[in-house]
Image (cartoon, rainbow, N blue to C red; front, side, top):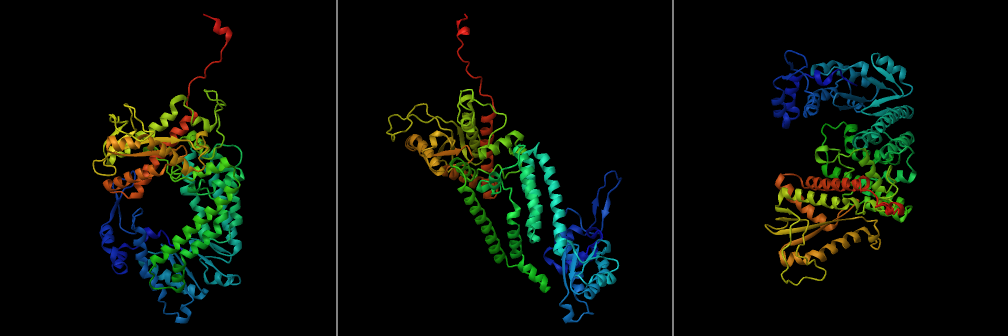
Length: 593
């Protein structure tokens, strides 16, 4: 059942009186908000109009206020004196805002409907027959039409709160219609992806995909219909994101369907998980479902039980995708395994899960986004030179380690400057490239840097302890480079580079500077070593305390700023100008004076 303009026609005077009894906890706030009419300004009007009825659209408390205002009506409908207790138990009603529903025998629903039409207008609830439906069992259609001549009557079913109630045939038609709508949306967002792939990706992840997630959680056995949607995603949307004219391969699709933290793109194959999502939804709402079925007068959620169920569901999803990743991992080559491991590092995917916010530097243009995806999975780049100016083949791996053009230094300096900028928020005496004190005969460990003009990247006070000076040196390595091939695992690569920095500077900083030293090691794929993680976590703690922020928000902000700096300088090193190649020797030109 639906009502006509329900939120605007609610009897505000009655509702303000009733809320003092239905929900005293918020009554004072609601009364203070609504006791006097609000001014509504209409474009082009000479004077504002007064909002004297209903609830104000856009008010955060509007939904709760409306629900409380309907409680006396709901209770009145259940106190039907014409029904005996035995008859009464078969009638069930459920309300969501102005959407009312009742289930039971036709004659009982007729009494309920008549009472609703009689009492509803007193509360500002005006039932609208043209938008209300009766779903009758097969064989009862004619009787339903006779009893409810003004209502829409069907024995197939009808949509309800975004899902469907009725026969399997009706449900399949409903889902088919939804899938066709979503396919149209996929086509539209694919056109946007051709111009703004990052914006289209964010819209898909945080907006469009939630539409079918909801239907999957409320509608069972729809895998067959969702296959059509999955085909459209694979054949149209993903190629548009990658700026490719050919369809996505099965291997790429299986990787892209993993969560970002597992090395994927979080473009899930919903046909694989729709049944599980429905079962999870049933688990999560079981207590509420029972309360509705039993028509409980009061409903108190068991918060701890719901937390346990939510944790169980979350862990189930994590285990599912870990197992899925392990299955995919077995069929990959060694180089592909390394790429997937790098993409799975903590923080490596933060650029994917960020909204494209220009003010924070999180916005990428079309080429940067598609290049970043290609770097993530070592895919072939479009429109790049066959050979580098240094004479080597211009592969991704070579472009990221080639010293021509100064892009290796640009990558390093960008992280150095960003680290100093972040430290200035909470630390004291922050400096870039501070000169170290002369050794003056101090005995340093073997391998230490003893040069008089030695410098480190960043220094700051009060990072670990009050007024203590801490020094930091940054290194960015490329995991697939030949120099890292002997290091079998990614953690071993980080440890190797951290120890290399420590051998060079740790002894000198501790003995001569009387400070502490931390190497900040990053990979070109976006991960960072343990030492770097501890440093930035410490800065996040201080930032959260100083700014009154949540710790996880501060950590997320720092990691994203660093990740986007690293990503952009990595992409730049592939595309930007490296100088003209050295011309070959020409004996005829060489003879000219």
